Image 1 (cartoon, rainbow, N blue to C red):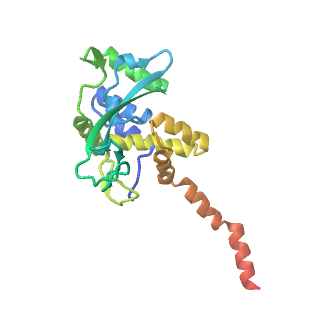
Image 2: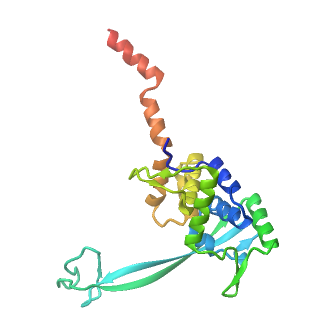
Image 3: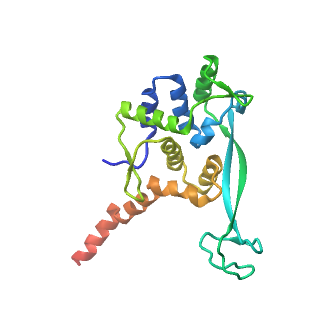
Length: 239
């Protein structure tokens, strides 16, 4: 049976399949924090507050802005004429702008204990004057997750929108966290807190996990065919 996401018990199996503490910690942080792989690889020892039980996450995102070469009015990707000066756009001017966002996430005691153990064993490495938890590339991190999934006997996951099968990747652990959160609390406040935790600017990005979880749709459908309603319908048909 094709699955769209990992269940918490499957993530535990995935973590158990890791051969090194570094890899176990990588899997644990991606799932328990629900962070992006770029965010996990950037975590420094100084970002961890063991007293408060938090990890500070810094997310750097680059956005490309297109502008009219004549009047500098901002353009959409499909614009043929400038809405500012009305001239036909031949070659738009591209401007890159970096957005740096910081959020502080709570961490459960077990994960904090694993981080402390990893630090005590000399796991972190020095980079740019900081002690970084992981000195690996995004490509290597993806390899680690895929290798652990293969050893754990976990199959590919299916994209519910496209139907395409994908290997278990670092982002699938972020998805697993989000879907677990939606299953536990899909109220308005719950979704707002999830949006803040994941670092989504748009609530619609967070809402996709509600759709994947399928809880609301199933409850709605079950109500359509509740035993009482079906019984009433059958009695009416007999009259």
